[in-house]
Image 1 (tube, rainbow, N blue to C red):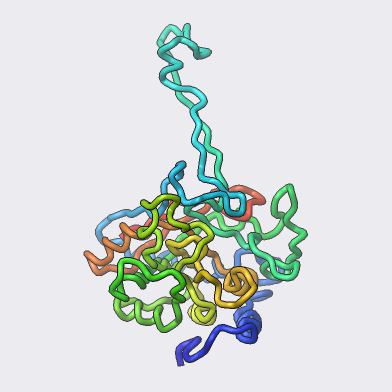
Image 2 (cartoon, one colour; image 1 turned 90 degrees about the vertical axis):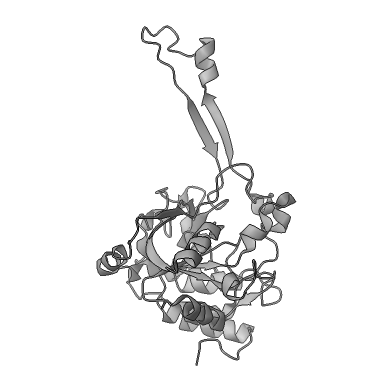
Amino acid sequence: MTAGENLEPSFELFDEYYTSCSNWGRWGADDQRGTLNYITPEKVRSAAGLVRSGKTISLQLPMDDKGPQTGAFGRVNPLHQMVATGTDHLAGTQGYADDKLGFGFADDSLFFFLQGGSQWDALGHIFRDGKMYNGFSAGEVTAKGAARGGVENMPTVVSRGVLLDVARVKGVDALERGYAITPADLDEACAAHGVTVESGDVVLIRTGDMGARRDKPGWDGYSAGDSPGLSLLAAPWLHEKQVAAIATDTWGAEVRPNELPGVFQPLHLIIIVSMGLLVGEIWDLDALAADCADDGQYEFLFVGPPLVVPGAVGSPVNPQVIK
């Protein structure tokens, strides 16, 4: 039976999944990599063999002031600021204005929230009852950063990637807000695309939600609003298939409104805290989806390392698909 078939999300089912999907202690009491442990050297070598044409596709949303953040959870869009410019050089106001060879320069800075755009959630990002993945205390994350569960524990993320274009399989440009993606939907996408999800894979799940909203005023409530996404019922599917990481084109990966009343992001508690799964959000999957539909290749080499920011609980990423 497909995991989650004929079941309805409930608090009892949440408790069952939280226990049965746990990877605490699986890779040792000190492990901080979680499901990335599924990516072995053999897995990477195999994934490299998927490169056929040499095409590369970026999945990153541009980091600028046109992003989806509206202030929810205090997050704002990136602020790019020039510190030194070519006009400074032409005006003769730079420190090297008298250089005999005419030296000039430009410099800039960028202020951004690590979870404000295309990003990975580190395992220290989410807690349940005072604990993070592998039983570490939430107290390990202080104003100085994360002593445990920081993004620096996953400096390389290279594996086989698989796109599951659920929206295309359903015959729509974008799934409706509140559509909960079940194991049956994921299996249907695998069958339609001719792929099998394997241990150590990075699974990219396209809902069409980003493309449907990014050109509307304020992104039409994309950030923290209602959206399609993974159902709570998908947790055992991800666990049983030993998925190394998932990423979606939505703000929060799981379906919103959330499926359990009075709680926030319950699937995050299972997949990040209990399972130790690497989760990516706000990824631009539309160009990849179009390319996969064109060439029929839904598996590829995936390269998506985070920035190495010791103690950070998330990181921007410019994920690359190589086909």
